[in-house]
Image 1 (cartoon, rainbow, N blue to C red):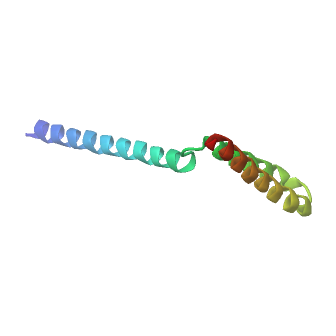
Image 2: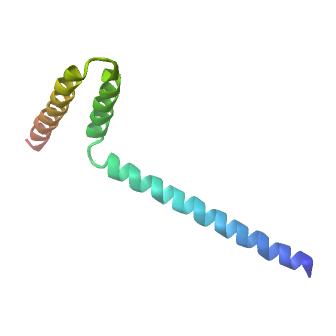
Image 3: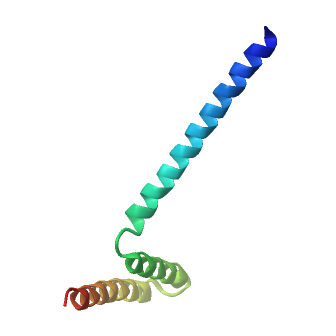
Length: 88
């Protein structure tokens, strides 16, 4: 009887592990689609702007306050120009 109980417990553990793996893959696909979506270049540009922002941590705050918004504005303008070219 103990062997049957272990077999049932083992199958239950396999089912739980498979469910967790499936949920993890679904979670990863959601975030990939949410962050990257149809325009992966925007995701990359956002990462670049954030990286530059972290890099500006050692410079005076006034420089960062000017540079980061200019980078963000430039990224938006670049994206809009790229979108217009795609529609033509």
